View (cartoon, rainbow, N blue to C red):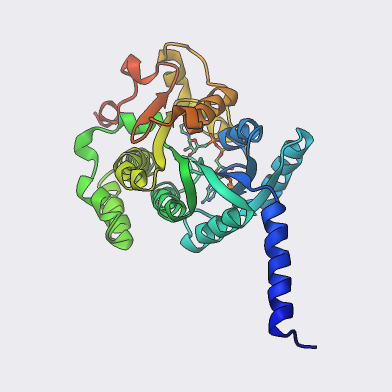
Length: 299
Ligand SMILES: NC(=O)c1ccc[n+]([C@@H]2O[C@H](COP(=O)([O-])OP(=O)(O)OC[C@H]3O[C@@H](n4cnc5c(N)ncnc54)[C@H](OP(=O)(O)O)[C@@H]3O)[C@@H](O)[C@H]2O)c1
């Protein structure tokens, strides 16, 4: 039986009332939230926010959700490959449907031993463009987006960085990727994954910094955090390359994920509301030691 106009209005009003009675959730989206720093941050942010973790491997996400739920954290998983724009759009829609998107921690990334240079660039650089562009439109006022870079960004000599290509990221993504890869391919094949990683992470720092003005117009904050050597599945995969950095650093040890999780949560907190357009290096004093420039490796 078809509903007449009055019935429809009554049904609509009932839904509206139910919705307005439902408490609005403060949502925190964490890309790469199935493991490592992302998962550790979910455990801290989960004290005050509804958590949506994303990544590509469903089994990993499910395992992480079990862990979060055991801690009494309200959370769900949403599979998403950040290098695919349509996946990030779907993630943003899901987050909006749940509540106010207050915090986005973009921790998804791939390191040099995990993939070839093209893939690393697509996930780390293009993925960051997707996350920042798409979540800019859906975040609620006062919100904060944190892009996770790396101390590797600090090891890239400025002369190597294709700054003109960086600027193309806001105009033509296809050309941006082509120019970034053209620069990477100037290097010997065995160095390309490493160069792509450092270059993509230097781009992340630049992108977050230069996005701050735009984010400010919507009363949003955006910044990047550059971790040093941390004990995570990625840190483990890179451990042969990390020894030199650990030994040279001021603290002479790997970072614990809880340490970076606390930093992310503190930066995202509204009480840090004047913090935007910067990179925060959290590396146990590694870069300060002067170790590890790409220039040294080339000579
Ligand atoms: N650990 C370190 O020493 C270190 C140092 C400097 C910077 N970082 C940066 O810190 C961030 C977190 O890394 P982590 O150390 O916590 O390592 P991790 O445990 O390997 O976390 C990375 C996460 O990113 C996800 N991911 C990879 N590619 C993705 C894609 N295309 N789309 C969506 N998710 C993707 C992975 O899940 P799936 O594979 O299932 O997608 C994984 O859960 C990364 O951006 C990394 O570059 C780490």
